[in-house]
Image (cartoon, rainbow, N blue to C red; front, side, top):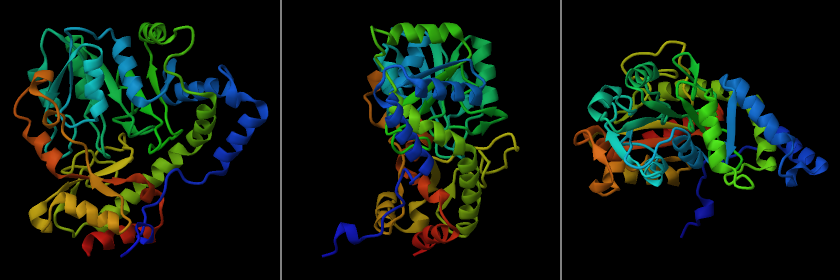
Length: 372
């Protein structure tokens, strides 16, 4: 009987990094690793402010907490409604409930798998206070249209850039189209400290309300000095690694171009719509690379296919569960029957990002595993 440890394993994350190791040693040497208020959080905040062109940065314990704090900062509460995609991270839905508001679910685009902006008007009501917009699996939401709609109706936007730090969306750094942008530094993320997150905003009122909520004699949602220390050197390489991931996505899609039954969210790196290339003003991030899976064309179920890929050392897994299929109907309002989100629940596969920093041989191994 084969041992699990004998099977091929996907590339591990995070990668060995001499700069991160040096930062850990410095934090030990100067004692900042154990301080409440040391230099590392200040430096990380300053670097994030420059990257995003936002004056206010709030570091926090997770991306999930960051979304909750964004809702508090926008005064979202009891009897308010928050619009979000029916295919999204579970924590965003639960955060809306946590502050006493009601989630309003809209469908996803049938091609890109992202929030369908054309449904925002149907979702809007007099109680709509905010929209949570997540860029997922290498796709991007059409943010100029979201921003125009929100501004017309006095609705706030939370832009969840947890999957694509440093990416560019229609000419702006991801997270800066929103009234608040949200980042995650979780253990699997492109920038990782094991845990952690951040918010960015240009609005001093939002930042102040968040700080009033978090400061309770100490910071109730802290990012530690040690976490900040390891994030700063990763920021130094973020643009370089984002570029390499983008190039490797293009290479991988070329290798898979003749594989029936897998259709990527992007037809080429930088495209948020499989039918047309985006302009150079959009450069997505690739924490996950999303595919629509066709069980008929591939002759097996999505979950069986994912299990086969895992056994071959390829980190290709089912995507999120759709929110309308995992929560009681009384907890949310929906615009329609959400057919595309239902399809996403049943058919999305996502490739984890570490292989996208790999070699041409490793990309070919992905292609060979899928073809076999």
